[in-house]
Image 1 (cartoon, rainbow, N blue to C red):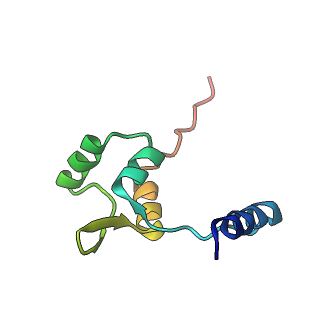
Image 2: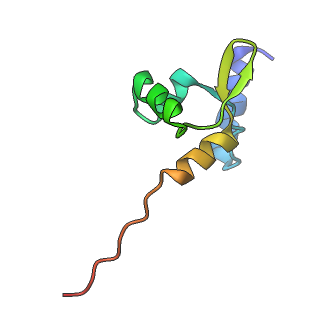
Length: 84
């Protein structure tokens, strides 16, 4: 499958409303997505607060499931305001 075919398939999925398949992210992509610097990621990981990592050889990946679990742990529900 060439590059044009891949772009066309992605566009077709986007237009049709069919969700595109999510792929694992490397650390840099994860940090870019969540607007954090890599040093913050490594501090979180050292505290045991980072996402689960998949290691393939020397490459470190974060699977969509691990990303979702991490995001759920870090999502803060708004506090309901008390009527005055």
